[in-house]
Image 1: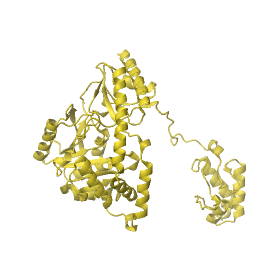
Image 2: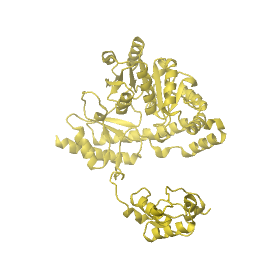
Image 3: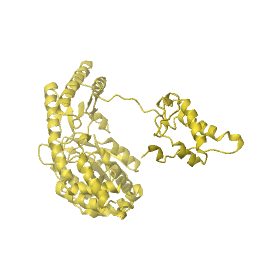
Length: 472
């Protein structure tokens, strides 16, 4: 089809009174002004002369003459058989607005930022099959709003998968599909605040975003220390909190596991205070030295909300997460979800349901565990070679390693030296809330880079650490 025959709208208008100028002059002035102020940008398509004449109710000759004048001035490019578009050189004619320009950033040479999966391995072909099946088999009613808690097929598939893989207790009716973990925690925060909760424990160090989400929901986040055994449960009573958010299977960012003794202590605390725990199970499927510990939620499903996401296992861009909610909270959480967004995108939910039911996630996880383990091994080996006085802490799991440096090295100096080498990474201080200090510790994500790049990058990090050491 001739692309000039495809209708295209443009926000222009003309007035026929004598004081407004000729129709052609009005078209020229408005389009010229839109190009100059950047409203219509270089390369943007504009309607064909026939289309614009129809939209404005003027003769085509008026538009042809106006376009010809704008092309002569360098604003438009006209070519036979193609839709007119704003000339590339028109960008120089536009008045610059520094507030609208995207910042120019150079990508890092080595990107060790944690908690990001290798999205290049996303199973596109398998996902496309599931998406195609979802679109071709879904009913007309599936395109309506439907249940804000999620489509039945996905809630059933998630309940089966989570029970089989993570030991989560609860049927499909207690599964709520969210647009990622962030939305899920926000919904829970608003629900708990509305039911009387005031103070909520968060791990320290821990996820900084959780603090902001809970605060926005009307709760006061209270830092609870984490040590080599996980969350300090003994600190919960003294903190006078109504609940706690934690990452028991693989604490973020330290990488430790909540010990069996601490698990029992937490369960006892929840029952004694009739409190609620939110279990953020963000990457428990990635355990490399042994089977992952089961979900904490399975030990007390009436006091623990299970929260999961596809962001680490597949890709953050899917924006799919889930909650498994205690029965007593289910009506209030469901209401909050309804008011939040009227439901997560339903076509993607159906595709994910097909993907889960066909074993697509199981296959992807098996493949990625082997790949991530090899990348982690490469990182640990190179750290041992280049930073012999450093120590890798935490379990062999997840998407990043926690590297503790000898005392006396300033994290800020390491970060500055890495920045000079265009190395992106984070330190544990970024995740601290309270005043507690600890040894300088780097967080090195390894999921996004191949093994050879990881080894080269760690060597550069070691050079940056030596530079920082010399400053002290």
